[in-house]
Image 1 (cartoon, helix red, strand yellow):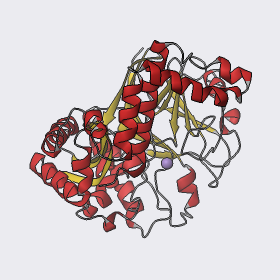
Image 2 (cartoon, protein in one colour):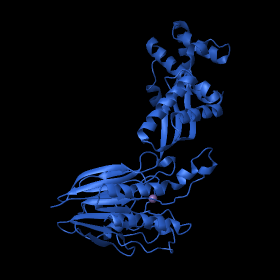
Image 3 (cartoon, protein in one colour):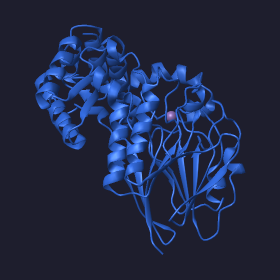
Length: 420
Ligand SMILES: [Mn+2]
């Protein structure tokens, strides 16, 4: 029995508008605006190069109402290209498509099948032992379990369920067309081609239940490689399944741990190394980077002293690494490392406090005095709390307790008024 291959994608959100991006300095506005179109072109090119037999689009082809006919024409044009290569496309509409009153619907090329929104249908793929079951969203908020009404599997064929769903719920996604993973797994199909969740997720294997993620990230919450899933089927079984990126602009959230950095120069060197790694991984794509500096670091004060110029320095490092980097945001979330000996030497209340704590540990007389002062306070505690306390008459546990107290006070002092 011959095999076949298909590309499964979803959430193209063609011509998705920019969300306030133009207010960011230096944002590659034109590139971002065109990114969803370029990603779709890449998908079509990949389908041709890989000679796949068909392409599945699991909803949210459009982002909402078209501004004009251009959005629909662009899609039609790309599908016609697929058609000339002998490749069919199967599409269900998702919540974003339904939200648009796409009354301006255009006639589409003969190689494209849109599934009905009225009921689940089954379409067989001519020349291959495969059938596709699907249903489009009729309106934005579908709260029915659509999958429950999908037809029974056709025996001796590879059954694909094309469905826009949040399954039993996915963070950050509306709970549309809810169904359980168990329900899908037990339905008898060999592959569930899902859409709606923008993060790629291989939910189940054998039968396969897959969210390919969206085709092109649109903001920092859609970071990482974006693309489609290329599936190879032989003798009714999935023999290969791989994620193929088609994105043209990649959002990257970089958490640079600068805890080992002593000063601003070392921090910038670390940032450069992390950015170079991101550039290598992006294989020539434009990068939109959000940089988070994290970790308890000796450089903390130097970083927060002048965050604006730090941002400019980071941007300079970025453009030095590649001419296709845009720094979306720089966030400084570092913490100071408390220098105990320096703090203890201070001629103020903090210095005195630390000095007292430090000397208590080695001074049995003072420790005894402390114990007697604390005793009446301890007696006021409920018995169950008192039972969990260390025995302060024991020198070792007193030392441990004092060290913990010092750590806690330093952390509180650092967290509270540690301004520039
Ligand atoms: Mn979507």
